[in-house]
Length: 223
Image 1: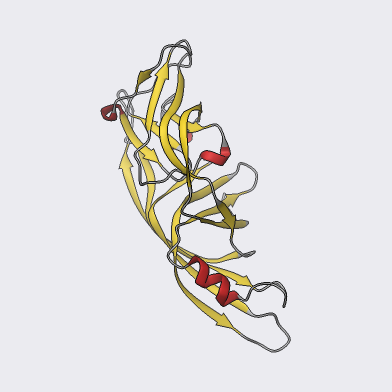
Image 2 (image 1 turned 135 degrees about the vertical axis):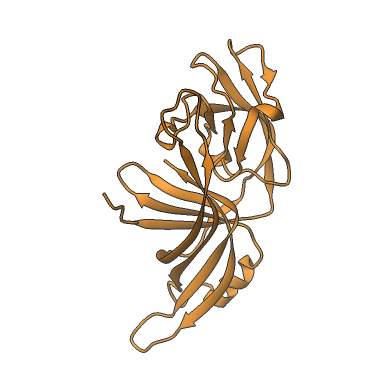
């Protein structure tokens, strides 16, 4: 059944970062993407899920919650900085605890002007995630290149002008969340940067600006 996109959210990440110390992570079921259970974990605190790429986070596991062992780099398939997830090459068991032992996260995030998506363009790269005893080859889709356009507008005369607002975010890393399905929270999520703008001025209408964004690293399918 086709999916109808219903919302897009864009947030500006300011340069300030906070420090992560032993942050609990919860297991995410991504069997719908061909990943085995207990191989994907997400930072439980939603305010700390957007990690800075300036520092590589470290992760730990424990089978009792008291004694923790580092998850070695060779055991990690991927760190999803936008979304605060770690993907393990081999699954753990349901008895294990996982935490983000160290790292940096963006602790100052503000929402862009109210917007709605008007055009989305993406290039898809698929990664083979076939497991032993599989009856067919399984691929995991990762979005390596994406651009999209949103329509934003100045809310009132008392608000900062659109140009003043845009001047303040040029060059800033942003978080883009493009919701694909309302019922199960399916979304594309990742870091982006603003590429360009077009301002439309028409009689009997508010001043509207079309903003174009390009991906800054991978974007992921989450839910």
